[in-house]
Amino acid sequence: MVKMSFSTETKNELSRVISEEHCCNVTELAAIVRLAGSIQIVGYKKINLKITTELNSIARKVFKLLKQNFNINTTISVNKNQMLKRNNSYVLMVTSEMGAEKLLKELGIVAPGESFYTINKVPTNLIKHEECKRAFIRGAFLGGGSISDPEKNYHMEFVTNNEDFANSLKDLINSLGFNCKIVSRKNNYVVYIKESEQISDLLSIIGAHNALFSLQNTKIVKEMRNNVNRIVNCETANLSKTVNAAVRQVENIRLIQGTIGISSLPENLQEIARIRIEYEDMSLKELGEMLNPPIGKSGVNHRLRKIEEIASDLKGK
Image 1 (cartoon, rainbow, N blue to C red):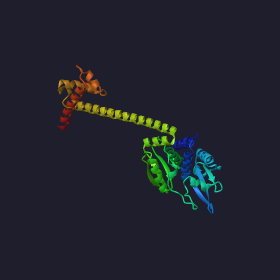
Image 2: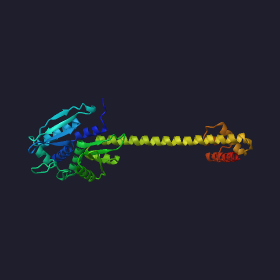
Image 3: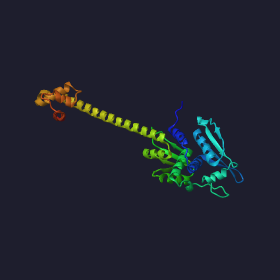
Image 4: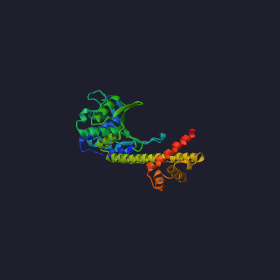
């Protein structure tokens, strides 16, 4: 069984969110149509509206919103894509006879009047209330959004082919306390957010609570994993440092042994030199405990530094 992407799971969750307020449902539908719809001219002053999505759950939601809020009964057709093993696409068609022109004007996509001029901004008359703003952002995500798997990176975006609308959507999202930006990609404009905290907050306000919990859990696990790796790396570095020091100490003692002899050293240095050569793997603390009388780690370190100075003098000579 193929695992659904995090983005698909989030959209499926949002497709199940249905507001009890008529105004919010209209606003959400306006955003979905704005990003997933296309207008087809089919005759003199006649247009059809075609809404295309890759998810069955979104198609069903659009079907329900059209029926319940505009009394438009449309059908969902499936376009099977044989190319590149891509997903099927689901198409809903609202014809001129069904009232496509009236619908597009009510959704704030086509300007009032006889001519069909599209309005390339978020319709201000539909987002007067806080809940309606959230509904519009939810619809924009369903129509043209995606979110990366938080295991890989933090990135949420909305894709539109109109720069003015991208700026208008960015301003709407940022008016709720966010800091999203725009980048152009091929012939599209992408409104995006990268910070994990901001993505979490945005998922919360549009109603994707399961996705929010999943993202936060993944973030906690990643942080724990990173902390463990940092500790392991730190311990590895310390162990490497300790081993290198021990090797250097043994080399110094062997140099003294092969030249002037260990017995030429002061008595306290002789004692530590003989124990260090015999127990190369011991820590400084353990070496100190073997001396008579025992001394601390700093005392052992002091004696070994003295031996290193003597060895350095011998190397110089």
